[in-house]
Image (cartoon, rainbow, N blue to C red):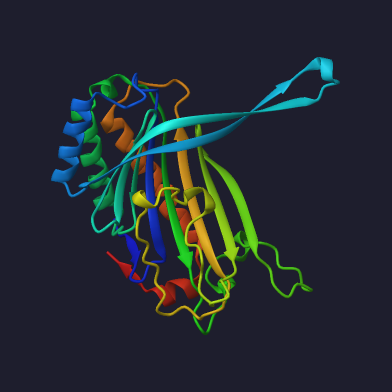
Length: 292
């Protein structure tokens, strides 16, 4: 089966996320397990260990009949231990928390190589965190972020399908903002597309490359992004295009690596198809399509 790729792809970030039921220890494992995990990560090039915390904010709605039907909003705060392993010139990292494992890459070449890397991480995790083999799978997700930088001869709307862009009123001198669509792609499976049109900083260059929810709060765990700035026309509005494809498991099956990676394959297939539908012929011509 033929596959297409772009010679000058606008892709800057890829993330695979695996959610599961809570591990019994908030510290993820025993000291011996974590030491063994670190050694295994070093063996594959993820030598930099960062012990960190992440604060999750959530909201809970309660309807109280005694308050004339008004909803009461309760804010919930959860501090979670986070263990990050980073390497490959700070282009890849693996993040462990009590209920999830996140694999991040900014040096993505193709899905097959990324999946192989993900499989090696899952093998290491299962071999060193004994409790992981007993958890239940809750969700698998795959996310791609592309930064679309217009050249001298084109505007942002020449690269991406107009329906994905924020509405531009005729009277507006400048329009920024974002549009979002949520598509059901299968049973308990959804794809969230977010297209953000952003204005460059006074310097004429973009000041942010990732969606706000992906910004790394701990500089010790941040990754290096290398967007293709060579052809960007300084001062033009640019785009941050995110495809987040996820599948939930209401029945919470027992963790199984083969099944998990199969779900990742399924998520990738539709994500890739969506990307090719979202970009225009102008984008394909400028970025260079290669058939393999």
